Length: 229
Ligand code: B16
Ligand code: MG
Image (cartoon, rainbow, N blue to C red; front, side):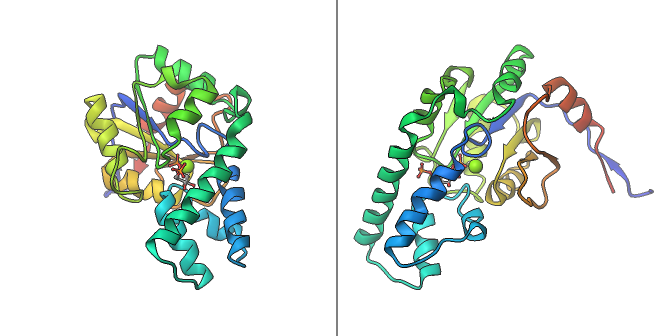
């Protein structure tokens, strides 16, 4: 116990990933990539799809081409990525408040009422459109998305930029993420990471299945007592 270290945290900001944390859209990305995979005669497995979560569209098609053992020109890669996005957006047409993941709306509202600063930090170039469809874009101080950053998760840019715009130190922020790439990005950013969902996320500071029944006050108290050895 002599090496035990208590990490005291004063949380002032919450940064939420979008797909798979706020919005029930991860399965739609998967469906859209599977359609591209079919065209390439390649079956994209669920395990491979886990490695696409939080990864930009361009990096995703590069990974898929690699797994499929195919090589493409830049123009062909762009065309496949464009087609994937058209498929994805067609699946997103009916998105609405029903597609906010369980407990997220109440948790976000309670966090706003508690005076916490809220950001969305997403790899998606469609993030604002999706948040508008869900009807919750106004609850966030800032949306940092794939249109704003140059480097995709696991690079920490999206979270560091979010903290900078919120005018907060990284150490005062919690990142909520459903992807391994996102957890790595949060760690590199020097932020506290909360893994969301049933996936087997490694190295996150804390894990929740979803936001149902979760109160920000309660979560912050719980996290402030975490002891590392
Ligand atoms: P788009 P997140 C990520 O969003 C998704 O997890 C990932 O599957 C997707 O490829 C990426 O956004 C880019 O999305 O094609 O819409 O620009 O999880 O970081 O919110
Ligand atoms: Mg995600």
